[in-house]
Structure formats: structure tokens, C-alpha cells
View 1 (cartoon, rainbow, N blue to C red):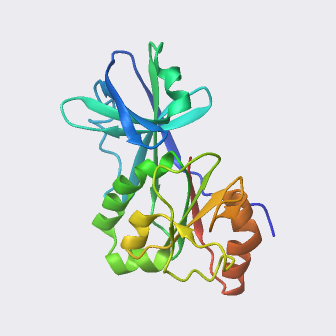
View 2: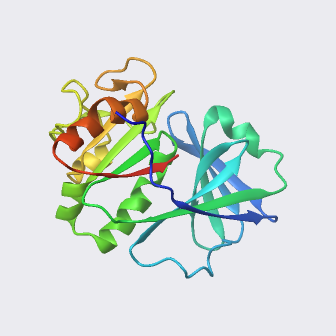
View 3: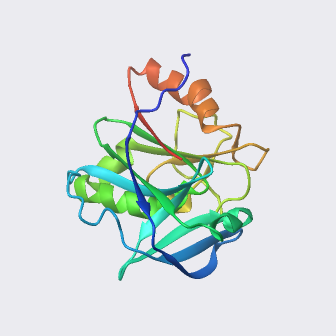
Length: 222
């Protein structure tokens, strides 16, 4: 099987020079939410189409941290607690906007433990352009982690024939909406695939889809 080649998604980079840290609080076990006061550099951007899905990240030391824009010029950054110190001496934020179009009958989102914080926003955007049944039939989410998860994994009730039968750990938010998901971990964890998302794709998901003549669109949000 060829190596996994996710679809390239656009990345528009902007910088924020003036910001203030307002608060730090626990977003989930081992994860922090850092609230900033700053102006959204994309708020005047209007070149995204209504069917385009958009997520923002703060880029720092070759890492990406999910960024959500709030009201009144506030923003929330999600970090693992052992990375919070990276944000104590910053004079400037580098923000990258990534976007992609829904252009396939089957779309696979590859995520990590941090980018999972983007899921509520992604679902809200997709639900504006796709019916609930369309999302259930065409969207698959596979997430990986080296540490803990910002949620409690649950055994999935949704059959996903593209993965080994013992890989049943899922993301409860998606499970409740009838959208299949599976989890990968670098260590042996109950119900998780032991390895990376790329390994699960290459060894199981893509060969199964190929036999059905299905060509998925792979979006990597990490």
C-alpha cells in the first residue's frame, strides 16, 4: 500500500503583536485553556466560501495549538499542561488559518489530542452545509495521542468495517451524533489501535476502501 498522502489544505499565516493573557484554566484533565485579549486578524477575511471548513492554530516551536475566537476580542488557546510555559514570554503570536472544501463521498479527518478541541467548531461548520445523514454516511474521524485524551474514550456502538474489530475506542461527541471515530495511541490502551493514524490508515482503512473502489479524501488537522 502506498504511503498516506493527506490532501493539502490552505494555510494563511498572520501575526498578532498586541495581546494580553487574561486567564488560565483547566479545559480537561491535563489540558489548559489560555484566554487572551487580542484582535482577530481574520475577522475582515471574506474569501472563504460557505462550504469551506476553517480552523485556526497558534504556531510555536514547530507545534500547533488550537485557537478559538470568542467575543469582545478574546481568544482561547488549548495546550497540554506541560507545554503551557511556552506562552509565558511570548511577544508575538503566529496564527495559521487552515481551510478545506468538502469534495468527496468519504472524508477522513486525522487529528491529535489537541486538535480534537476543534471538533465542535468543525461539526458546526459542516452541519451548515451537510445534512446529518450525509455526515453520518461520509465522515470518519481518526485521532492519535502520545499522552492522555481531553475526553473519556468510550466503546463505539457504530460498526466501522475498515478497522480491526478490537479497535473500538471512540470520541463520545461524535458517537452521540452517529459519526464513526476511532482512536490510536502510541502505547497499548483499551480499545485503541497501537500506533499512529497513518499506520491505521495504511494497514487497514485504505486497503478496505480500495477493495470497495472508494477513494477517500484525507484531511490532516494537526
